[in-house]
Image 1: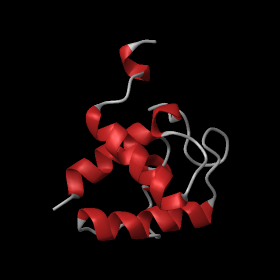
Image 2: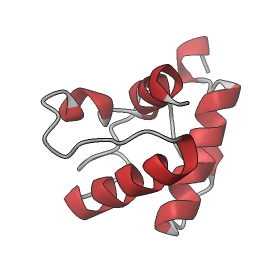
Image 3: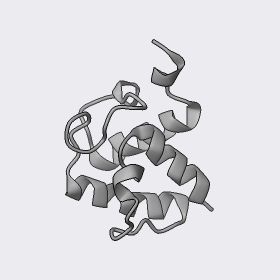
Length: 90
């Protein structure tokens, strides 16, 4: 396993947050940092993404907008979602 495949501490936190928020049947450690979250990969759908966005606003204190043109990039992987949350949380 290379360092790009290893979760950072904050990515582990976000992976656990996703698993809990969506009641997924995987462990946070099973979510690879660079695997897609949406569609193939973790298999999230648009409703899952909305649920994560709502939970993020409650947990991390900022609104994720459904009309953000960067959402495809933000939700492209655990690593990109964690980076977005880290840069916007209050």
